[in-house]
Image (tube, rainbow, N blue to C red; front, side, top):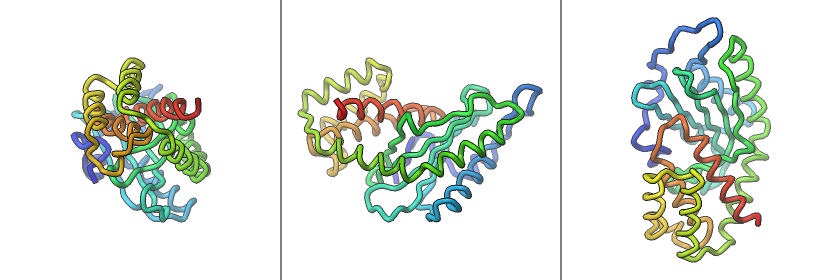
Length: 238
């Protein structure tokens, strides 16, 4: 698979080797490895599904991390993904999201509704994190089925070429795409790199955007994809 952010993808071993800063009286980091292990164990134990793939990303100094496990639902096209973000430099609050993974290109679907954040790394952050993961996993299949419904809605809505360009411009104006990400998205809309997304519909446009979103800091993956997903569900719901 290409990876959710190919220029930043690393191994699990590289992730756990990052040294965490010492906790303070008001700030207590959750270790990357501990968070990933708990997320994986809870997902498998609660849902009874095997792990199909996993991916991890670090920024240059390792102070921001994104992790994702994809569970095997038996669907040949999409899998249930659970994403995690964390930072060691206080730049990001600990966050968890449930969504879908599009296997053909390793693109992600995370909605804002399913993106939950522990807002402060206080001394109780580990307890809050475990509760958050348990809540998300409990709702995982419901959220996954919602993602599947959104996929079908996007596939059923035509989107001619010029409208696609216009919507990409709106996405950039709303800050969903940076100029660099927009350049990738415009290119993929003009000439889709995957035949599966060559139809002139909203689904094809969505995947052009998610190709663009692979450019960027790993720690912001959940935020970027949640904003993009909510933007597109707004289009198909109107």
